[in-house]
Length: 168
Image (cartoon, rainbow, N blue to C red; front, side, top):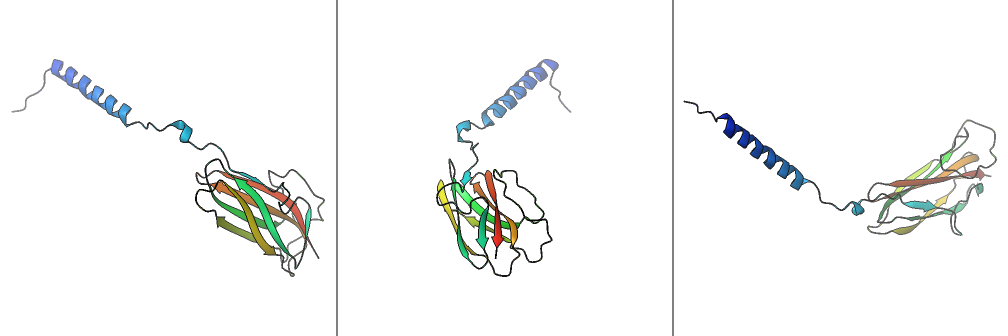
């Protein structure tokens, strides 16, 4: 035989279950301090004495160069990348402050393409990127972009790029 609770006991039980659910919900909410949330992007610059290349720089085929940029973050850096690619179609990047005189638009035959990613030691908040690259003798001359990016440990990313030229 099934025994049912009377309506008065059901209301008390319903209030008790609701109160218990509310208490569990409130106590299970995170008590993380919002000041621990990283809301700052890392910084990246080539605009210092050792930064290379500067806007409108001409790189000679067959020569070796050290690409340098300063990166920093308020908490910890994680990785960076360097991307060298042709700009024969005259596209732009959203962060370019200086525009250089460009050659006529042309079709790429054997353009330089360099894209590499690198990790940064755990916990560093400042770092100088130093990448040695020799410009191959057989690549197309003309307009190129040099684009750096940096990512911090929480996933924020910053980028900067400049127009450069590869010449004979």
